[in-house]
Image (tube, rainbow, N blue to C red; front, side, top):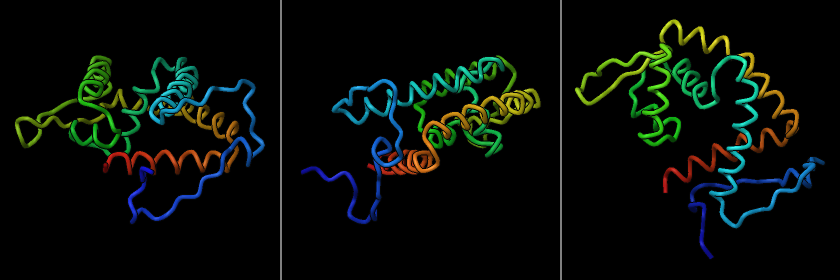
Length: 168
């Protein structure tokens, strides 16, 4: 049997939301045998819900995530931002180009000629603040659907999964 957790990872206790929290979706979704496919499907569906909330602000969830990360960390290299968000260079470059074109971020050369440092512009900070209410609404909706225990489980298990998958 293949081991997915390293021996020193400790333990992780997971309830299934369907059974433990009384949450039952209206429509059953076929479980796929691939963890990647199930995670990506969940991410796409959740992203669609966030996009619906953010639409009135003229921003996509993917763009909001970058603004939020930059608002939290300030000045950061493009490589470090990609690592923080688990984004490949091509996807990150494409999304950053849209943010730069909108005037929401500024790119400056770093100490090393190859390094690019990113910061929010004042317009980017404004856009982030304007969209924050819609993002919070999306967060509340998902949290309400999952329930507190389901929300906590989802947040912990996705962070834990990303951390371990990134190491191996």
